[in-house]
Image (tube, helix red, strand yellow):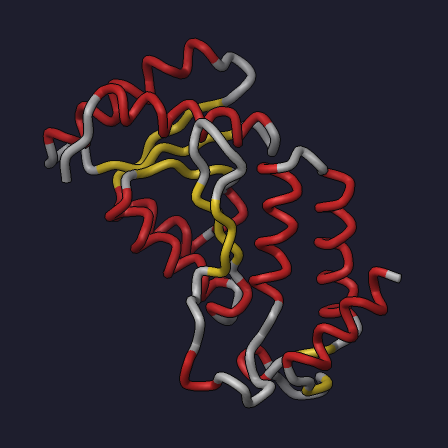
Amino acid sequence: MAYTVEEIDRIGRVAFETAQKRRGQLCSVDKANVLEVSQLWRDRITALAADYPDVTLSHLYVDNAAMQLIRWPKQFDTIVTGNLFGDILSDAAAMLTGSIGMLPSASLGAEGPGVYEPVHGSAPDIAGQDMANPLAQVLSAAMMLRYGLNQPAAADRIEQAVITVLDQGYRTGDIMSETMTLVGCKGMGEALLAALA
């Protein structure tokens, strides 16, 4: 795990700018009590905070962050961390939603629109069976609108359509529970289109 000052600053600026578009809270996750590279990470993120007075910065060690994410996920707004810890925390966060099929993701850089995709990958084991949950992909498109294309109203519309469909009780198999209506990928897509209309 090697990071340079320049790389941490680049990542940190993207994180602070993302937090500015949200609730203005940024939690930096590291292991500065053990790892030298995390000590550098914490120092650089702390130094960048002076450039973003409208963002509240906090720090957590990764083990505590994992526990806090499970215990009280709503306390977090924007989290910035290195790749290793980010991989672990994003998988834990995916399961908080009930299914990995519910979690969108974005790989953002200082330049360009970024890469937006669900965290779950392609699920080849269920390909062509009308079983996949499309919500993470749809929510990834909403993230692209919000963060990559600066179209927050369009992003809000998509996110509200997802909430509406879930409130109406539609569920794919991965999030199905009693009293809900089971639909496949196509059915969920049709319900989303109706909610957007």
